Length: 109
Length: 112
Image (tube, rainbow over all chains, first blue to last red; front, side, top):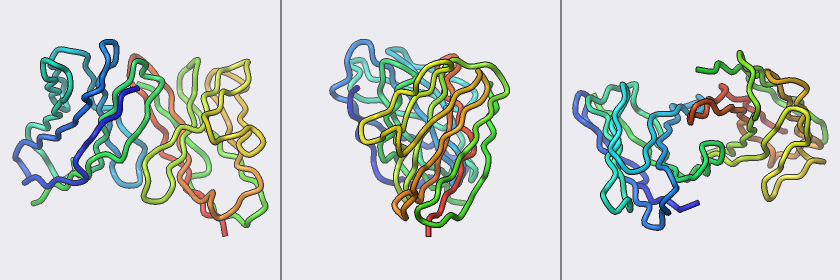
């Protein structure tokens, strides 16, 4: 599975959009981009996934570039409860997830 | 969505002993996964457990150290054997359903 690169940490003001980038330049055609988050002392939580097209659900939007070498997770109106470590994972199989170090997002009041 | 519970939620154990962690799912699932999260680190997959067959272990993890049972489609156990302080971690189980993995709350293990 392709490796991903994420910033170590990011801050975001409460109520503003949080845009979390992820680079996956070695992604292959049949690999999906998955996003999970882990709030402190809890198990990880699925957020969203996509292959080529942009995706949106009740939690977030996923924007994948046309060449698929990078993506951005957007939390449209960040709240304090969105403070967590966000993991970008590239995999052919949702049962085979390799967690990297992720991005610590801190939402500031 | 699957709901997963784990027991115990935390434990403090002495080195050389063993601890068995239980994972219960509220629906029948084919595969269950066990992860380890060492302090300040990300998650690492230990093994995949299918009902009715031997678990499949990832590189660096062996059955003698982390025996797994999967007696039915809603339950699994992970045993951490002959513990050392390096085994101090959070152990999590998960299941996959419709492209999403659902994780339990984790078992926080401290080995003294």
